[in-house]
Amino acid sequence: MSLLAYAARRLLWTVPLLVGVLLATYALLRGSGGSPFRPPEGYIGVPETYERLLRRHYHLDEPWLVEFAYWLENVFTLEFGPSLVLRELDVAAIVRDSLPVTLELVALSAAWAVPAGIALGVWGATSRSRLADLLATATATLLLVVPVFFVAFALRQYAFADWGLVPLGWDGWRSKVLPVLALGLPPVGYVARLIRVAMAEALQEDYVRTAVAMGLRRWRIVWVHALRNALAPVVAAGIPMVALLVTGAFFVERAFAVPGVSAFFVEAARTRDYPIVMNLTAALAVVVLAANLVSDVLLALVDPRVRDQVGREGS
Amino acid sequence: MKAASADPPVAPPARRRQTLVALARRPAAVGAAAVLLALVAFVVLFPLVSAHDPNDVDFAKTRQGPSLEHPLGTDQFGRDLLARVAVGGRTTLAIAVAALTIILALGFVWGATAALAGGWVDSLLMRVVDGLFAIPRLPIAIVLLVVLSFRAQSVAAIVAALSIAGWMLTARLVRGHVLSLKTRDFVVAARATGATRRRIVRRHILPNSSGVLLVAALLELPTVVVGEALLSVLGLGPPPPTATWGNIAYDGWQFARLWEMLVATVAIVLFAGAANVLADAVGDVLDPRRRGTRTLGAGRLSQ
Image (cartoon, rainbow over all chains, first blue to last red; front, side):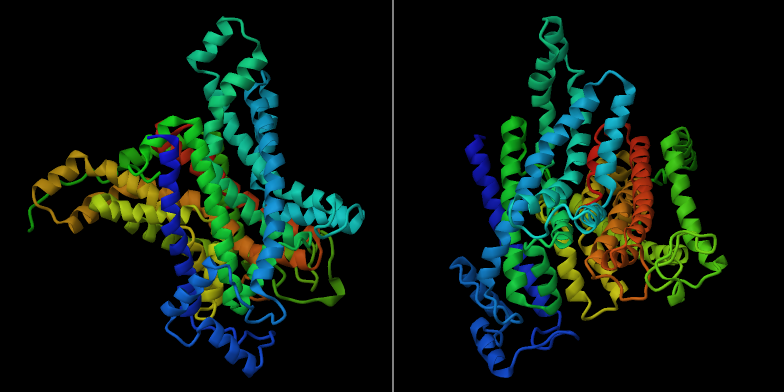
């Protein structure tokens, strides 16, 4: 199968998945009994006239499947409509303003975390002293297992509250340093652990012995020949990486008052503001599935054997 | 049809002992098991002997550091942190055990059904698993939790949210295991003698799946313990004054106290880390070919 055909096939799988996710979210929210117009304690509802308008706009009095169909149509025409609870906000505006912030945060974090993780992992696998290897592995494991909320909170406590080094928010590079640092730490550990194992294995291969026998320089063997093969598991781990970053973003954004999607998501889920939850879910699902698609295609690029396995095994 | 099918080698005790002996030779596994046991013992026993009630408020002694009277200090309401960590651990571990039970049941049924049915049923069921795998668990759990909390009590809602968001790995492991069992002589013989599918599952598949279920349970244990903490730190945990490890961390966050957060985090990391090390060791012992792929398991901790 050619790479293009493989990518197309993966893309086709993504569409039913996306619709499935949206339908499931919708059914869950609508089927569970709560109502945005009867909010939980502590939240102010909307006046009745406005409620009537909203009900008509979202076809809330129709069967939920009809409502879902209308909503799906709105998504594909990018007409997200008003929020049910936060009257002054348009859902499209929330998605437009907050999603790029989250994406930027995630992208910047991955951009430094992946190379750093590779460096740490290669160092552990290639160092000749056991102590260095142990140190690298221990660092990586520690980075991975310490929960992201603790890292984010500790960084904020010291750097912002105690020492006043940086501003909160997401405005200018100074405010971005700490969130990007905090969000990147667990992925560094994750990538480093993957690379260490894969690299140690790659260095045992015959072609490495051949390269050594032929007198190639050590750094060239490690960084060019062995690393190329050790990268496959990292690329394959794209999906857990995305999960790690998205999960972390919820806490990092909260700690550093970054105006991303997570606060809206949690708050809207609590007040049952369907339009916000649904559209943010849609936006997140698109981003996550796109990232998965990219990682799948990259993996097929690095490891051509993967292309032929599609559909045979549950990946 | 009641044909007598060949009796299965139901995990002969000799093999189980072998597994234990192999585990006992691994210092990491022994250490991890000791840490887990110590934490469970502390959580279960300490509240019985503690001098302080975990919910006793004392405004004269708020936000204290460690002292003889309060070994871990007190929180913003003057409650004894050591007692709260113990009692909170009870709630957290109860949530974890309940969620694990559902995860194992759901994962076993799903995975075994896929493997035994084969064909398009298998494809369809595994596509669903692949699809759910692609989505981060936390957002799924948040939506589920919020939806469920309108109907159920909050601890039950958390259990349901964690387990519905987390059964996929178990299903995949069970499916692979059952696929290999399916071709074994005793299953083939049972089928040849006309045993019903139900009998085959009860008599042959389930008793021979204890190993894979144990590995799945140990792999998911850290995820549900960390999952409880993640949800609680977002403010979606059981309502105060209920202590859980996640809620103690949330208190630390809300009242800007690193110490309190550190205490909860250490408990969580110790427990989750030990479970993970043990999961790796058990997996290696049960399936030596698996060695080397273990890093994939550890990465799932924070998802």
